Image 1 (tube, rainbow over the protein chains, first blue to last red):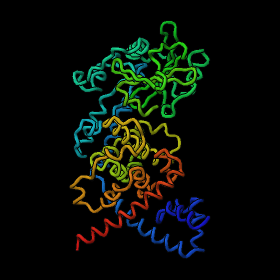
Image 2 (cartoon, chains in turn red, green):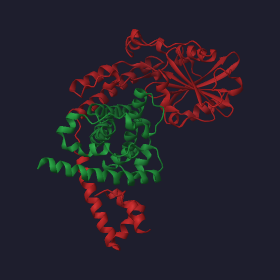
Image 3 (cartoon, each protein chain N blue to C red):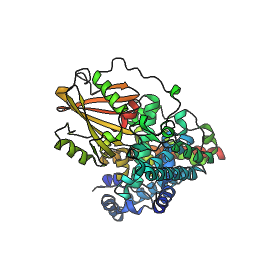
Image 4 (cartoon, helix red, strand yellow):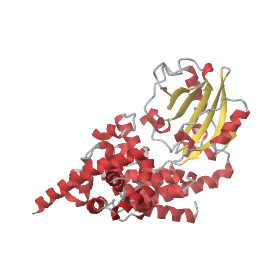
Length: 295
Length: 174
């Protein structure tokens, strides 16, 4: 390692940071300081400046009540989780509920600061429990509380949406947990089930989805075409649908040069793409933006 | 939720809410959104933290979550369909005037805004002290070699800007 390389690496070493100094690459560069006085002088100057910058940076103080607001929100979530667990024995639908977290202020374009009332507001927001799948079969008091008033929801045009997508939108909006072919929290278990039953089994799961817990899987029959669906939980439900490419109408799949195609139907977004001999459809309630993190 | 997990929440919040807020501030340049981002990262952790098998990854998980949440919001606001930080250069907003005037601690954040956009996130994370360059690479989802290069160039820029700002500040106070 020459001096130039050592300088490059030593820039990664923060002042008084033992973890950095234990890094083998940095440790090797640090050893050169004993043999090279000029390098040492340069390093000491760098460290002094880094200390000053870091001190300034770490002087940015959060609002005094931020910690309390975070803890209040998390505790509210914990309380809600306990309520859901407590209700579990009363019905089979509870796996399909999820808690809504307090909506960030900027989502409604209100730039309010953190105040103690936000923790309380968080509790009310979380109390609006959303149904992950079967919205229309939720207990009335829950189904009505997870979304803003219906009048505020923009109407999503469905003209031009392929019949297969319309079919899926309808199936998903009417879905309830008792219809799952198999329930499970591990995507591998659900894939094994699909494979063993001869249903379309996704050859590839998008990385972001792999990290999520699953709810279960189900298959649909669309005019003789089998579509398998695996449902994931992430604050709301995401569904990955797999179908053999040869069975998918052309109006569903991306055109040449396109990576994917997006549709919106029944307040659900559908992103369709092809990999190998399979067509994948990722869908969730909302718009295309709600899918962006998972592809 | 058990008492133990409540204790864990409290410990985790105490340990990371400040650096998370600072990272959020360096991204959003807005104290309200910074707080909001930090809060959101913890709430997502409350929802999904149980599925995190390696608890030593909590710190980088929280930073990653905050960063993704920031990008998600920016995409939503500006219809951005790419993660590339270069694209965020012109839409990050500016440091609020009252903050600029009144808080000396924001000098480093101000200086950071003058650093090329692509270097900003790694440099901000570097000066938060809590994160190694390997963790920074993981959070920003770029190769370690790229992070080393961005840190080197970004730090060089920041040092020059910082020195100039320190000199300006000193001159103004004389």
